Every structure is written in C-alpha cells, then in structure tokens.
Amino acid sequence: MKSNYVVANNIRLHYLDYQGDGPTLILMHGLTSNAYCFEGLVAQGLTKGLRIISVDLRGRGLSDAPEHGYTMADHAADIIQLMDALDIGRAHVGGHSFGAWVSFYLAAHFPDRVAKLVLIDAAAQMHPDIMDMLRPVMTRLGKTYTSFDTYLEGATKAPFLTFWDPAMMAYYQADVAENGDGSVTQRSQPAHMTEAITQVLEEPWTDIISDIAHPALLFNAPDPYTLEAPLLPVPQALATVQLMQNCTYHEIRGNHLTMLYGEGARQIVKAIREFI
Image 1 (cartoon, rainbow, N blue to C red):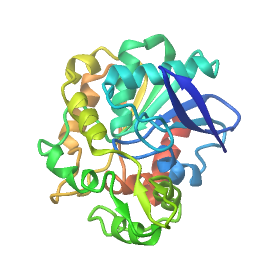
Image 2: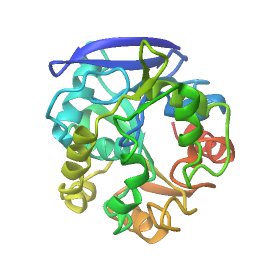
Image 3: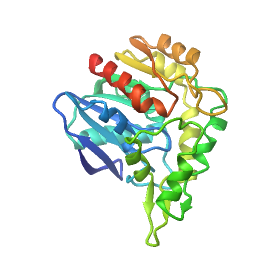
C-alpha cells in the first residue's frame, strides 16, 4: 500500500493505493471517517485480484480542508479529477455511508466513468432521526485530547463499537493529528462536516438513484447503531434496491461501523470478489 497525493479540483487530495493486480475499485469513506476505514476489508483479502484506491475526501484525513465546498458536486469533481490524474478512464466505484452517496452521485452524473457500484449502508432514505443518531461522532470533531491513548479510550467507548478489531487501529491513528506537546487533535472540523451532511440530505436521492442502471451491490447492517436503531433500516435499504435497475441486496452482520470489520468484512469481501 502506498500513500499518495494528487491535485484535484483545486485541492490536494490524499489517497491510499493498494496496488493489487486486476480491476480498480475506488472506495470512499463515511461522513467523518478517513481512507483507512477499509483496513478491515483489506485484512479479509479485498486486494486479491483488485487494485483498491481509498480516498480521504476533502476535509478529512490528510486531504485539504477548504473553508466551504462540501456539496455532492464538489466531492464528485474531486474523484473524477483524481481518476484523470491517475489515468483511470473507468473504474468500479463504491463507499461506506457518505461515500456510497458520492458513488450514487458519480454513477448518475458521470455514468461512463463508472463500471459497477459497491454501496455500503446508504440509501435514498435513511433512519428519520439520522441527525440525532450521528451526534456521537459529530460532537468529537475538532477536539483536542491530552494524548492519543486518551482519545482512543474515549472513542472506543462509543455505543456502536461493540467489539475491537486490530484493523481499526489504523483508522483511529489517521483520525487525529499529533501536536508538539503530545496531545492530539481530531482532524475533521464540525463546520465542514455539518455542511457536508446538510448538503447531502438536500439531494433528490430518489430521482438520482432511479436513473442508475449500473450493476450494484447494496450492503446493509441491521444491528443498532445509536438510539437503539440501525442507521439504515432494512425497509429503506430494500426500497433503494427496488429503485435501482440492477442492484442486489446483502444483509451483513454488525452495525453501521462494525460491518466493516470481522465477520461483516468477510461477508462483504466475499460478495465483492464474486461481483467484480
């Protein structure tokens, strides 16, 4: 795996290149996450026969964080220009949560650049209380902690983290920047992420998704995330599968976060390898 940058859409975009042989699958993380969130899938063998490119979306990880510009159109332009910079004419595209919404948008607006879609726990409609359900991750944004251990101790007490997988460590390490005094600061800023989630929820997703003809997988984790409910309830996930012209549904063990690790990751990787 190599860590690299490209200049795309007037910002510096960071990405991880897992340089396996075979077709390219570009993956995008969730709202406040980073490119290392797919390490659980990599640990389960995702890179065998695939080149995986995992992107730090703008305002996350090591990518630039402009003051404004967190619409779906902004994120999509970043990915298209990253593909141009890497001389990738067409690729399989997918993501988790917010990253899956970017994937929907790319397929609808740049259909010739997308081959197949890998959609992880996102749909035209999520749980109606999504903003309240995201509050635990939103409240940690931009905060400074006395040490990485202090930060990690608090992060791992989140109600949705029902088990620990060693593959999670890379994500948490990339989530913060080290300061000179040993303290760490969470990289993503609340104003940027608030703009991003506000913009994404304003998109006419039913209209966008119903036009998508690309072959697709939609993975859905029904276990509780926060507020004792899944972020994407099964009926909403199935409704999106029905909206799409060529989409297959897979129920995955775990919740919105833990599905990316352990048994959930094994199930996802198996389905992707059969699909691509």
